[in-house]
Amino acid sequence: MPRDSRRGWIIGVVAGATAVVLVIAGLLVWSLSGPGPAYTGLPVCDELLTSDALAEIPGAEGAEIDGEEFVGDEPSDGGYESYTDCFAAPAGSGGGEQLLYVSARLFPVSTADDGYAELQRRIDDTRRPVDEALGDATAGTGVAVEGGFTADLEVRELPVEGAGYAVSYSGADWGEGNVEGEEAWSTAEFFTRNVMVSIIYSGTPGMEPAERLDAVSDAAVLVEDSIEAAGETV
Image 1: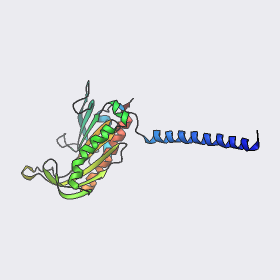
Image 2: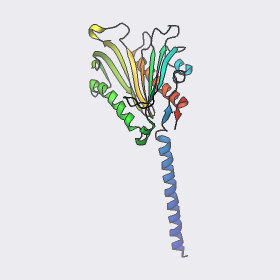
Image 3: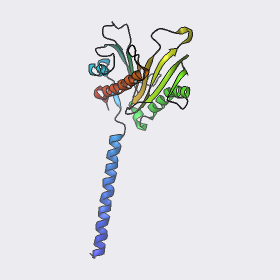
Image 4: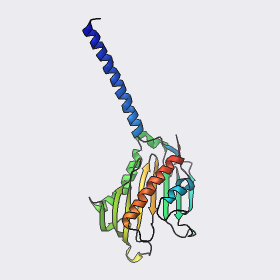
């Protein structure tokens, strides 16, 4: 084979091999960064709110846990197949106070077919009233909130696998329906694969709004970790 032809053949082989490596590397990056496999089951409350997780949430160490789990034969009107609802009351309260509420909803495995886009749409729908109330801002005072009250609001993104957001409500004014103890709280809404999670955190006495927002954001990450650790997948 002439030297020039041989050189061209070698270059072609090297270029082809490089292309294969790049394709494999791209697939590997996609598999590592893409969403994981769908869940087929949810953790029970003791698995969702472990003692280690509760110890990291202000006021929740040693909390008393109660809740319920449900598994249906077919998807509910809300589109989910099963749920786990958990309540955490401060230690020694006898369950009379609610510090933390966590609700997890399991949607069909088929939602993975489009990359869990259905759950993204649901999160967008729940967030829309908050964004509309705040306009282009991430915080506001005396904001009229869907539900018939006004409050000071702050919203932030959540560092979860899917997508989600947390909101701090403080100085809530319910008008004539004001109830002591319902002036401040924080919430988190997110999805991780085919599971949607809602969290309500009332906080501890004297907490600042930013502290409540930090706490519920941390709780969201801890709950997601619990789902990943104990949840069953396809």
